[in-house]
Length: 225
Ligand code: C5P
Image (cartoon, rainbow, N blue to C red; front, top):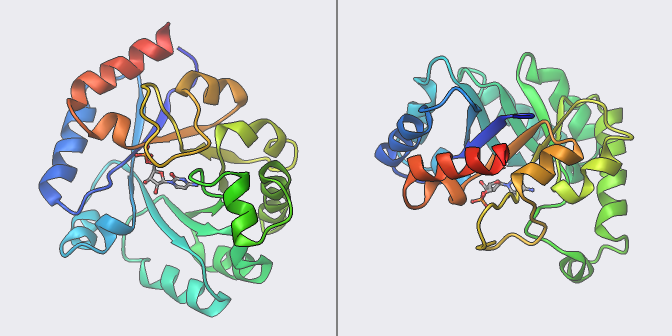
C-alpha cells in the first residue's frame, strides 16, 4: 500500500460517539490514523475536556481561525494546555496574522486552510473573488510558505500545483470512496489524492456514518486495489 495517513474527522458533539469512532478505527496497522476535532466537538459541553485527556494519539484541532492577529495569537495561547499536534487557521486571515500565530504556536504544527472543499468557482464569484480556485489556492499556498506554516489544507485537485510552491505537509479533505459527496464540491478518491501527492487525507462521514469497521475495511480494500 502507498501512503496511509488519515485524519478521521470526529464531527459530533457526543463524547460516546467520539469514543466509538476512536475505538472502532484502531483495528488495523495498515493505516496511520490521527483524529480531527472541529468546531462542533470543541464547542460541545465536554468536548474540550475530552481532548485534554487523549493520550498517545495524533490530535488535530480544526479551529479554522479567521481573525485579526491579536485574536488568533490569543486563541492559540488559550489552547496551549491541550496536548495537540496540529491546528488550523484560514490563510485569508492575512500574512501578519499567519506570522504572528506561527510565532506563538511552538510545537503545535500550524496548518493554513486555503479555499474550502465545499466551494466551487461559482461560489467564489458569489463571494466576490475574481481568481479561479486553482490560482487562488496557489496564491494562498505561496503566502503559507512565506509565513513558514507547517502544513496546508487544499483539495486533491490542487495538490500538484500547490506542491510546486509549498514544501511541507499537504492535507486533503473532500475525500470520497462511495458515491455520496454530501456538501463537498471538490472531491477525490483516497487513491487519487495520495497519487497527487497528499501527505494526509481527512475523512469524516464516509467512515463515521454507518458501520465504522466496515467502512475502514472498504477504505483499505480501495487503497490496496
Ligand atoms: O465528512 P467529510 O469527509 O466531508 O468531512 C470533512 C472534514 O474536513 C470536515 O470536518 C470539515 O470541517 C473539514 N474540512 C473540509 N474542507 C476544508 C477544511 C476542512 O471539509 N477545506
